[in-house]
Image 1 (cartoon, rainbow, N blue to C red):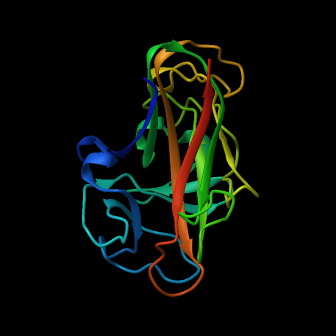
Image 2: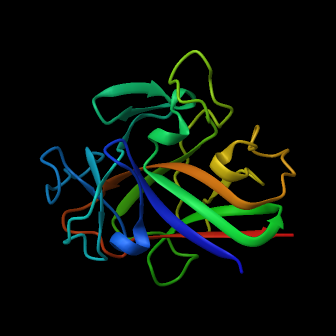
Length: 212
């Protein structure tokens, strides 16, 4: 049986099943959980939380947008995006199937939690897929894109690697793998910026794919 699950990755204790610990990820300011993010700025902390961002769950890795080609990791390390290892991203998307299959046309959207063609309301999101299975930040660049994407409904989407296999080990450059596996993993950095004051609850993520 096919299934897609979402995990929050954390250097504080591994990966947390978001379905078990909350409904998604919430983005907060420098004061930690519950702290507001200034309008026009990007988050300093990421947590698993409920649909309203009010219930504190496990803390996730945080990758903050700093430049089109770089991000600041938890601990104030600013890195070229291609230097960020898979294990230091905030989100792992996992597809499972009862038999080994290939996956293709994998797409991540940010939407308003009503219609997947409509972008989130009042917030801008930067997204980046890491293709860097090495645990070392520097010295071995990943093969992912050079810059963040700004997904918004169906207007702009983030294409994810085809057939990356378990732990993303077979992703290659994201377009050439034909790996058949029962597990496929994608690793995504997410950074959010409020465009106006107030909590942003018309804000969701949607992942679709084909398998064969």
